[in-house]
Length: 375
Ligand SMILES: Cc1cc2nc3c(=O)[nH]c(=O)nc-3n(C[C@H](O)[C@H](O)[C@H](O)COP(=O)(O)OP(=O)(O)OC[C@H]3O[C@@H](n4cnc5c(N)ncnc54)[C@H](O)[C@@H]3O)c2cc1C
Image (cartoon, rainbow, N blue to C red; front, top):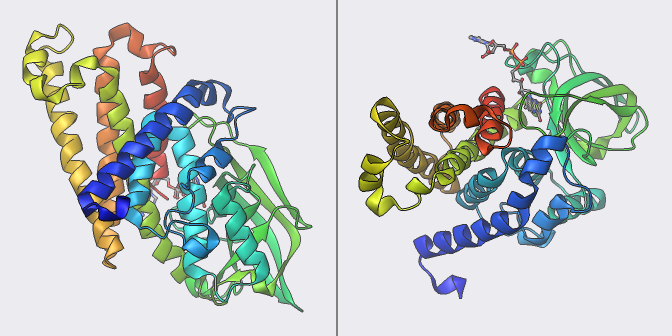
């Protein structure tokens, strides 16, 4: 039936289905995830999202993916973020940063690689990607982690930092220097599996936001990685890294759209857009400066941003990936969402500063999102 619909109709149907999914499965867990700093025990959110075909939106059908594009990936990211920014961040790293990376760059496929993709897409396994190091964040090409060539593979030595999903991931894309004298041209990407001797994770980092989305450092102590686990060509890792950054920024940009929607949804006044003005005028909450701020920062701002992010997604689906637009989308969306969350807190007065109200969670999430946009 979905095939008979127009492109807009298919998008609307996908959004409606996603909305139902997040309301039924993610929203009930959101405050537990935020409060405990862990995904809930007893409910396997990874598997639930896998059963719902969310992990392989851009992956080919032969691995269990949906073979769709970035537009649909953005819809999924936006809807999940509306329920829980933390779950959505972990989801994004798993499905886009890790799986999409493997799909775009791994060839020819070994049996192990195919299995890794299938397990990641089903949600049986978690995925992560690690490029940053304690002294190599914004200038990531100055990384120090080394991969020395040996018979049949490479020996990885060094440390990584801020790896989202690191504590729970079975498959990780890791960048290291195969030639330390060649600067950015000496980087190679590798597929690392949990359990490889010499690979371990450092303790989970306690962040001020995005609670429950696990982040940690990685430790490589003479870890042997077989040569078939090199992702792309040796020394060409910087191309793998830079080409994926644009698409990562794009899909991440849909997150703040969902966070803004969560702020607006909290106020029943915004539920009925048709009579918005009348309700605003009558509202005791939204007078004077606040009313102006909400009108200008929230609804119109969100719509302009929504159009921007989704037109960049359409361009990417049509093979037109513009790095400036991808970076612009995440920058504008993250900054706008921060403003909107602050206004939502103001609207609630003292309650906006109390943990029982979702705005406190949202504000921590958008602050985390602000930091993450650097990636
Ligand atoms: C929640 C979270 C999750 C993350 N997940 C991952 C992950 O999964 N994988 C991964 O590899 N990394 C991850 N990161 C790391 C992230 O990519 C880095 O934190 C980011 O690249 C910034 O690097 P840095 O922390 O070293 O800051 P720095 O590079 O030291 O920057 C510090 C400040 O200086 C500014 N700055 C830096 N250079 C310039 C310049 N040239 N001009 C002006 N200002 C500048 C920055 O904007 C920033 O405000 C994550 C980070 C966070 C917070």
